[in-house]
Length: 347
Image (cartoon, rainbow, N blue to C red):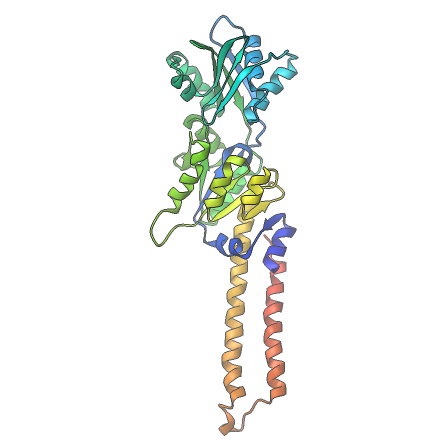
């Protein structure tokens, strides 16, 4: 109770004792990228025309398609079009393809906007633009390809800056002996560029992961057999919910979706990633107090009960019921007092 109360004061909402007891046993921590490590507010940085259609038209088509989408990258494209006061067209037959992109029709013509998987699926050649994409992705930008039925029309790149606390949070978790991973649907080059900014090792990046597959990567780190490793998942979106549920500790951002916050065992109300390390430290401190209380309560009773039972009567030493009752009450008071000292712990 004292531990969860201290967490609440720090903006760390711990839903139950299980989470508090498990957090100090963690070995791996997986961060979702968008909205967790990054601010989740991407901005369009580049628009590259690949045909006779100019940049204005490319942005108009892309924004018209994306205006009904709820993806953060869609918001970035529509926001850019709004800034430039571009009039959007009506679309038909809109279809979102998870992990790939979207498609829709404008004035009877079908357009695709998404990643290379979407282009390959629809038999659109992308060989000629691989070098341009590589340059953008190595800068940590997410690239989106726009195509019609037959050809590529343009490339739109967007960047999502990492949070100010991300690098510090990763460093503090590593100091506690935990191994930090990042998971994202972005391409490998983009993901590794973002991971580098956050101080996460490139080999600890899970990239190009479909939303429904995130839980499988949690299982992969947990391992199999009797001794499973403890894994925490930190996310904020609807598609993070299955991974949050299957992780030993699911940590949701307070700014995230209701589904994520409902699923998580711990909610970071201040959206500060350094609070993950604080939650682990709080768990260690709480378990330390539990062990202290167990030791002193047992030590106290191991000495007191035999004396109260008369084991030393032959030596003229007895313990009256009144004193024994007082000693028993004192035992409880000492445990409660020791627990309350946890409030003085600085996280």
